[in-house]
Image (cartoon, helix red, strand yellow):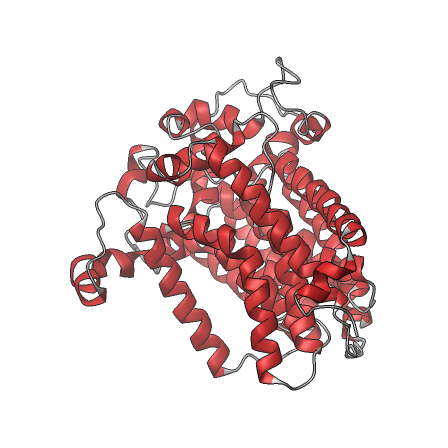
Length: 471
């Protein structure tokens, strides 16, 4: 009944928005979303990637409309790009309609699958998974640090880092045969989370093994902290929590968890501020005194990357020519050449991500070749198929994720780690183009295989030397 009411409210919100009723349309859309979120929480628990995907969907989809409704300050540099950014205009109506059609696609999958209790089936707790998970975690950790180390020295080391995050990441991307490390890092964190939950009592043993593990990922942590890459650290923390609780469903959100989430949100928004050239850290009290107002402003998701996809979408709607034509799926075909670097495929077509950036955000290109704008999946869907696009793409994405939620009950290594990696895939889903999402998924699978092959090739004496040989 809850999901049927949510479905009706969603359709009603689309109708109201279509006829120009912003306030009532937003009210019904939020009611539909919150009811769906409550229903899914009751079925899957908060430690499910599907539930977290819906939370992220809400932050990307509603932070800007709610801010406009309450007349909050979300202007700053964005008004220069779109004069009506803080107002209700045609582009905001279009964004909300697309968002609600995407939600309608999600609701259809929930109605068809979640109501049949597929996601309510109990998951048996794992027994001791053995030290192989720890060994695999350390192998993946060293592979991530080794990969990052190669890239670090090839782009100039500390001098490249001194130029900022966008420059450093752009320089790494431009390397011939650069070595991606993120997949190895997330695989490593996931494996370690599963292992540390499964081992028995023995504090000193856990501390010793944790220290060895931290050594394997130390270089990756250092580089990302230096460049202020908070996103990767957030993803790693969430993957660790999901891995630690992968054998159970936690349906109650307790106070300590909420408090921990708030603290992390403040910390990582502080890291965002510290990335700015005019912000200097001279102690916590000095920081709060000088930058407290800016930090409070960042507490509103619309003033962070969660507002970027709405900005992209609204600029596209506002500035597109009258004679535009829908791309009819051509941007989704970019996956066919996404894996070929320009030194292999010199005439490689420009991705829709950078085509859009160079047209509407040319200043971003100067920051580095990979500097993006928070590309919107809703925008790409609308570019290709109009308002039908958000509905069908989010329906397919939800079906894929629910299939993995069902497979989460399996105990095999591949199913578990792929499920954990999907968190990052669905984290970037609302602000990335399809070719980047699909390419990232393929890279993760390849890196999983590399970790397993390396593990089989490493002499067991290596683990014995570290006191990590299997029981």
